[in-house]
Length: 284
Ligand code: NDP
Image 1 (cartoon, rainbow, N blue to C red):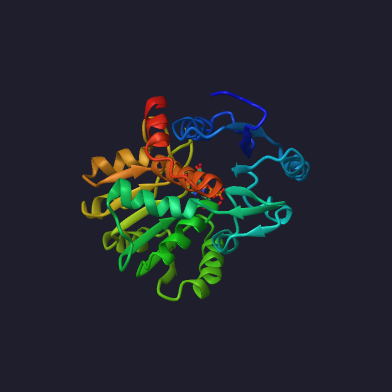
Image 2: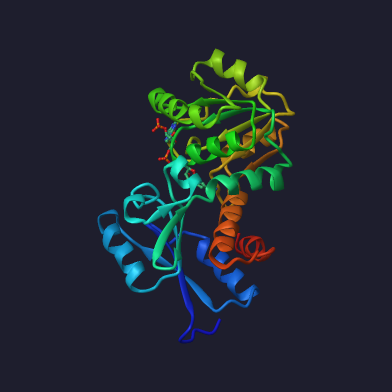
């Protein structure tokens, strides 16, 4: 990598960002595509977000990814949003377009591409259970609706949050039946036993002393697929459990790569090919 007077600057805004794989992925892609650009971490505390966005403008930064805790809070500081970012209510990619900063959401398309690439799953006409109703769930549910999923049932620890998500998305999802699913054993068993895909967007099972997952493993069909948007170097407890249940299962590393590839395309107009995937595979 040669830094020169014309090197373009990209980065990731978040707190914390030290663990992020995005610098590795994007720098590998810039090198592979011979683009004179560099991608750096910007550790920005919540209180400093307004100044950070002003700084992006002043320093002619060409684009950033946005992660926890800024995905929603950054919206008022941007000039425009893509239709996906507006509907999902969260931005994970910002691109400088002329003198404006435009917010995109590539988590949704990244999720869909990973479902296809990593699990060979096409949601059109299928039944999906989604665990969680936070930011990642919003991107996944939006993506599933856009892809023509027949039914999406959402189960969340705070039921009111799942209800709010369904109420908000129903007008946008006319071809998809959206339901809130109770966390009772009976309701989960009924819904999971007929699901084509179960998507986890919560941190259940990750914390050493957290709640264990509520899935009725005994009655889930081995044909049902499991996608855990959470990722860990040695895969997640949920993915391990699903595989022990003879199910095909993937963690969210594929979604991370696919959302990064889409951000790269937005910024540069180029397809990064296999460069990001290779960089992550070499690092994990
Ligand atoms: P949010 O904080 O917006 O939502 C968290 C969700 O998890 C909520 O539904 C919350 O329920 C639920 N939850 C949290 N703790 C528990 C628990 N102990 N038991 C049951 N439910 C719980 O987070 P995000 O949606 O932004 O992120 C969720 C995960 O997805 C993170 O691990 C993140 O890293 C990952 N992610 C991965 C991506 C990828 O590219 N692979 C992209 C985006 C996110 P409640 O509403 O009741 O609080």
